[in-house]
Length: 328
Image: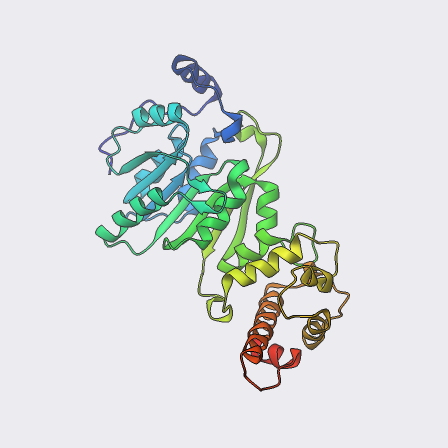
């Protein structure tokens, strides 16, 4: 734990502007930099994250270190990642007395579909060496990388048990959205597949500097990867089905699935699987809840596997009804 308070913690627009001017720093739109300046909101984050003194925290976006400092005072160790070199140098100066903070100058994303493996390895090695079971993630997440970071964190093998994020309000609504709503989509399904989601509070643009053009919100994500783990045989195939459904929202479920052009599966086969789920073949995929989407994916996969076995010499008779029953 740090030995004493640091006097120099910038958190007001006037102070930030002065320091940024001295350092030759400007808020970078490319990195989605909007700094949280409301002290009440800052102070609430460690409580929302339920931080305890033995917790390990991964923070994405160090910024000026204001939130990092509060996280460090409530946890065992904080790994904080900042892609902006100038901000990394500034926050390194501000946080230099905090011995339980590891600052990392890197992008949290290697690609849109992959977290930075060097960052993950560093955090996970420390966790194993210090016998830590879990990791918490806390972030004022830049809007432009929100969706890929959320999905990659949830899919990661890093043992994350809780995520607290400040995000564009629209994104938090999508994370918690229910079927048949405009917000319901791929992010909703994958977030709810791996976790329980709660939108804690809305934040006005005034609590940030520079002010964003949209409202934000704090979302709490309790990771529960065991919720559906035993029901999905092939996660990549499940994602393929989900993408087909939600990238063609205006189409019926049948037409969306037919566009996948799955080998050996005909339109009539898909009709049979949909009927056996007690669904109208004219239904749109966006009306299906998570249980139904899993059931659908497993039924299609089972039917596809069965046809493959048939082609390989298995003489059993396989029908969409058989596949649907196996998926239950």
